[in-house]
Length: 166
Image (cartoon, rainbow, N blue to C red; front, side, top):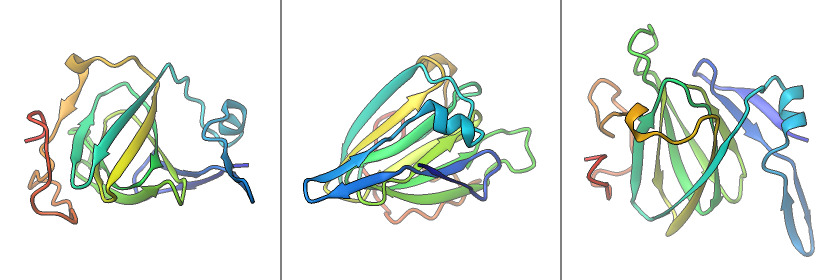
């Protein structure tokens, strides 16, 4: 069974999948189309991606105008930030942070026009995301991680960044 909660951002949902635990370890169902649909999530995912990052790596703020993402942290711990990047919206620039980890198993459903970013807090993280469209770099937007219009409170001053994110 999954638990779905609204966040402070319109359309962004926090999802807690069911976890079965016994003396052998854990079994986690990270996606079940039928359970998602019963909870009002009717997204057709077509691609899965994984990013492996090391401590203090900050990725994002990236997104596009069509793609839904279901994100989770399979290993380690991340500080995830989701930002409304719809410049026509009165909520443009509104953001919320979340701690996602291999311990809490929380997931985020992120709609189109929202930027998705995260900082790896643990020594290493494995970040998984399902996408409703195929990756197309030419359709993506990128905002600087410390864009003054957003005033995001990051728990780091000098993250490790890609050239795209600098």
